[in-house]
Length: 110
Image 1 (tube, rainbow, N blue to C red):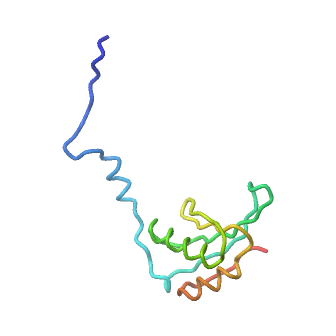
Image 2 (tube, rainbow, N blue to C red; image 1 turned 135 degrees about the vertical axis):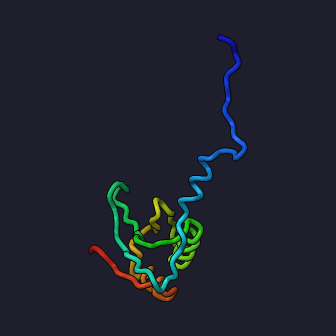
Image 3 (spheres, helix red, strand yellow; image 1 turned 45 degrees about the vertical axis):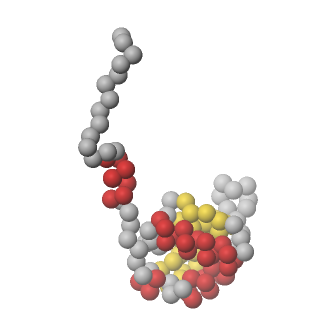
């Protein structure tokens, strides 16, 4: 067999990337959303993280909100699978911040 391989291309470029952009979520205003705050420690060597779930936000808006929460809580954190994780037990402080931003807040778990 020769070293030449057939390569397929199209005028539209890589269509897989176009499908990823189609899956983007449009953000709802804070007044129309309820943020659920959970405390999670499983799989983290006993360390606790506070988690914000059930927000309908674009990836950019989710990252921006995570940045605000991290700064105001003075803690590290990340965004994973549409969920904001902030290190430590900070649900009460996060509830204050989210309420100030216009979100309805429910604190779940013990």
